[in-house]
Amino acid sequence: MKLLIVDDEEEILNMLRRNLEMEGYEVKTTTKPSEAVNMMEEELFNLVLLDIKMPGMSGIELLEELKRINPLANIIMMTGYSSMANVVDCLGSGAMDYFVKPFNDLDLIIQALDQARSRVERWRAAMGLSQ
Amino acid sequence: MKILLVDDEEMVRKPFERFLSESGHEVITAGDGVEALEILAGRPADLIITDLRMPRMDGLELLRRVKVLKPDQDLIIVTGYAEMDSTVEALRLGAANYLMKPVNLEELAIAVDRIEKQQARDRKLKEHETRLVQARKMADLGLLAGGVAHEINNPNTFVRGNVQTLQRFWPTVEQFVRQARQAGVEPSAKLDFILEETPKIIEAMLEGTNRIKKIVEAMASFTGSDRDRPLIPVNINACVHKALDVLAEDLETVELKVNLQSNLPPVGGLPEELVDVTVELLKNSVKALHGRPEPRIRITTESPPHLVRLMVEDNGPGIKAEDQSRIFSPFFSGDPRIGRPGLGLSKVYAAVRRFGGETTLSSNESQGTAFIISLPVWGERWNS
Image 1 (cartoon, rainbow over the protein chains, first blue to last red):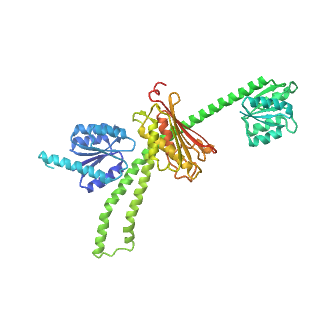
Image 2 (image 1 turned 135 degrees about the horizontal axis):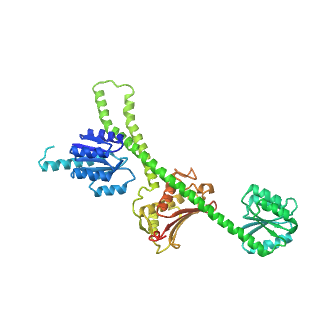
Image 3 (image 1 turned 90 degrees about the vertical axis):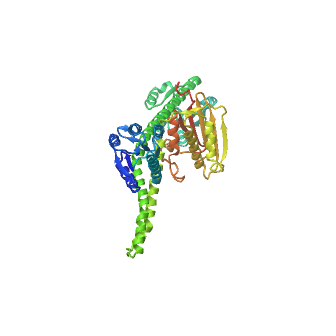
């Protein structure tokens, strides 16, 4: 399943990619919010990992933009220690979950994604859609 | 005020001494300049009143020497009409004032009073300046801490994430190596060592990132990362109860006095942070009391007009004067023997400042330490 990861730190993207490709996800990454919007318009991503603090566009703006493009996308936020107020806003705007950096346990992120993945799969099966 | 009275004639000294003592001053006397300097070496005076003409060392010489030792020493000279030259010289050397003989007690009272008031004004100004400098330093430190915290958090995220990744990947490698060995591949001598040590290496790296994470969190809390959260009315008494609950075990060995004012007005803040503030102050006192005889802590809340005040006092060893201005800096510890320096008091300072209040301390080595937190009453802060 396709997964889009957006973070302005290249090494965080690499680290997450390593883990999630091992788990069988088809991972695409970008450090730029504008590029994330383009990618979302061109391809169908049902799963997105999104950094809350991005240069040029706030995480919540990007979240709302991605949700507008694909209202069914499961978006999980990643946040630094400093933006708990933003997290609340993001959850209010339809983010599914959030994880605080640095991640205590990568397994928890993988679990959250796996749950989202099976939800998407169940939904697709119910709608009679193929993978 | 502590006054040192210097005159070689007992007949002159006595009435001055009596008059000044009756006015509430603490008076010490000396017969000449030499004796005066000896006394000053052990007991500094707020004001010296000295005659000019004395045996061994005269008033001018005393003034010269005193000003070298303590340039801001206040000194009044007592002088006669025949000594106008010396009087001018004394004023040039920095005497605060002069009194003409025969000295009128009313004039003496006015001169002393003027100096007392001036000293009070100077003290206030100095305190104010110190506080301003302190506040500016803390604000700079806050910005720095916030910046550093953010800059460290990202690399720490990928270091930690990659180490965890390694931890996830390692069992696959390990299993393969064991299988290869079972299949008869001859391992190098170091392999067993590597197999055994690698998980420990990973653990150590994780522990390192964990510590960095904690420091970053503490630094972030020092800057007040939740600064966007709206303040709400908080009852300080409730915070005290909560804090006492949290620290019940630590406080077991301490005699505790709790004087909470009933009907205390609320202050504007965040309840969990104000509990934290109280906990940190109490923890600080408990630490200071470690190993002390008859350890006591007194917690008081009161409400002077427009304010709510929380005081935490202990009878510990006190904080050295030179440490008092630094005690609120992050990672400062007055006593390296007492645990690891941390962010406790700097957090207190930052939180209280964010809620529009002020943290002060009064401490000396004989009586212990009192931390005083003053916060504006909720609802009144906006009017002032």
